[in-house]
Image (cartoon, rainbow over the protein chains, first blue to last red):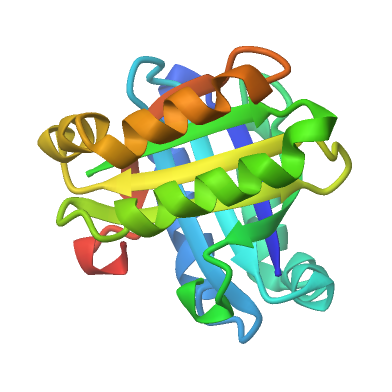
Length: 102
Length: 102
């Protein structure tokens, strides 16, 4: 499995639009067979900071996600709304040690 | 709900011990009534970087967690194993919009 964490700083005027666009991506991504999670959270003390926590079954599932129309649409839609380039990192799950926990 | 993200840089010699100690904390924390997730992941390209993704029902659940013996034990046990102070941030869940998704 693969955990993909992304930090996104959104321009203040585009926060509502960003949430709407990301919800569309979230709903479609959760239907992908290789996707296990797609959480969006908002910073407690920085209104413009959002955090995406995406979990995929394997690298093939990540690649499949990147080729979907909903991901392309999201990426294009939100591009101009970012206050700075988004910062993504990949992690490998350790716990829960049982795959069913994900 | 509250999402708590923590980045931990572990000294290379203490990585195995860190995982063992964190699994103990993970197993006990998952039994707390107010805890929804306690994921540990390891960076794909930085061996010493770990990421904790904890989700609690509310602030009372976070405070209850901080008062548990297993959290105190973990905190004390891993303190000397950190290569630098751990970096924690709080987030408020946005998506899934349904609490059941968490």
